[in-house]
Length: 401
Image (cartoon, rainbow, N blue to C red; front, side, top):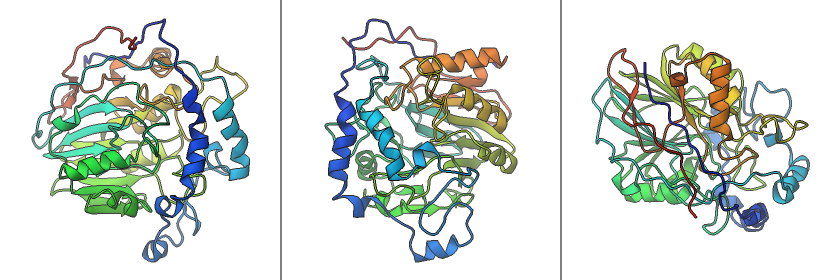
């Protein structure tokens, strides 16, 4: 298999990124309290009855069942406060380019035939999955910021790979959890106006997504399935993460990834997750995953601060993503969650550079785990054929002056 490996590069000498957005958590703290009843949605009585005896719900909040104590992202509010202070006032965040000069890709094909599979990265965790006549969007965000307000918060650095108005008809939206960079209400409202009728979400997120105007929202627990068509099903699968949209609703709603199954095989979308034993369990239940979409950022590069952990436990860096790729046994993995929103301590190029070096160190072919250019589709034709991409290598990207 020869697939051109697409890596983002940015030139040196970028205009430094202003750090004013680091005040965003203070703004979020001040504005989120009035919205608390709207943003947090605990399971209803029927759901709670169905979760009795659950290994990841204690009757009040969800948790990662294979973790013996709270992860950093799950710590109680008092324990999280020092982390919040470091996030606001810390000076260890590398500079990112103001904006990447990137043209959107060509308009996607309207449909792919039964038995065919196409994946087009839009940016961050947004992917257009086309398989067996169905068009599916994951964690769609076309907004300029992943934030509850339009004028502050982490800003998009790489434009969407598909123009919103050039999207094909969308049959279903998959939302992995309620964080602002994955559940973007303005984009979901635009999709509802565009005629999208269906969404699949983890438990507790139904009302929030239905409020955007999408009429048919189905919520599921881990390992539960929704049928999209006679050929295509979607199964919510575990992830090692957490949920919150305010400082008070932590883990009141579930999180997860998705396995999309059809005549063209199984495709795994991880959503947002740390590395854990759930990957091996997903591979056991879905032994023939043709492609996996795995996050590779944020993480803390070793050279940034050797005294702090490489990852938070709720995200993966490149090394952990490659281990997940091996656990899943997928012939192809596609990188996600990098070079769009600055959400951690890694520099703009660190995730892709780390992916390249780790693949080399482990003797894994670079075409087995790719970091694609947004907007250029990766095709897995019908049958046991190898993946191919419809784009060519491109020169280094530059931030706007």
